[in-house]
View 1 (tube, rainbow, N blue to C red):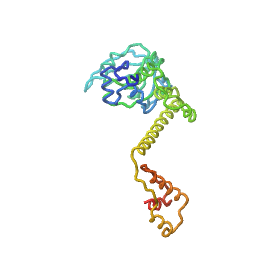
View 2: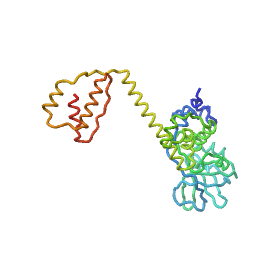
View 3: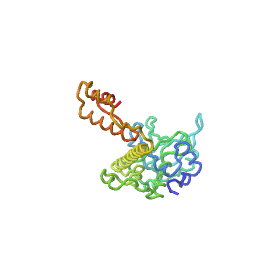
View 4: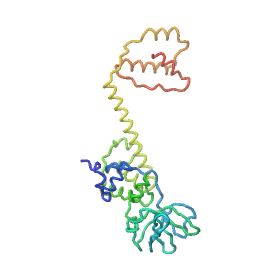
Length: 310
């Protein structure tokens, strides 16, 4: 069995419950589905802010620091979890309005974290609702420290705790466990001609780009491959159709065309028009189904060509 056809529940950190959600919400059934679940945008994670220098707007920012305390606070509807986060000099509040029970159990006091999220301001006091969090140790072990992939998601996944960080961790686990799982699908001379990187390098850099140049190279490779095989599929179907479906053979030019051309046509056809008529004549005389597009500017003579062929 191809390892990439392994059901997604067998990936470390997924399991049956998460697998069912991923299948239901994102149609991710196998390892291969997950690897081809491409990001729809990227976030620059190269900059760290000090809390005192945070921009006074709703920017997305990244901070290093520790949680000194957290508490559950009752509100009109349910509760919220609030944690105090410090970079050593100043503090910012982290707030969760959903999924707070399992988040509370996972938080560790006085442990170095990297947090990332969108700022909220109340007067001069900043907070960050539902931040992405990762221990500094795990962050330093990660595949990319510059551009972070952002994947499509749904409200149901977020409510069940399958955040961007969880999806990113799943992707990293798969890439690191399989090493180089893909056979090369494009011939070497084609890759060299168009300066395309390998399939494995492209998949690694589409999910964990090391820099903008490598991300661009990965996107170019994967886009080219998709178009290449789409075109190959169309050519194959065209060939199969011509082999299986025989066309009616017009084995001679009738008197109507000759009479019209020599006696009734009030102008001389252009060389391009004559060439197209010869090509169509060849098509309808070879016994194979014709599938042809006649393309040209307004006034170029498409109608007279169609009339004469009829």
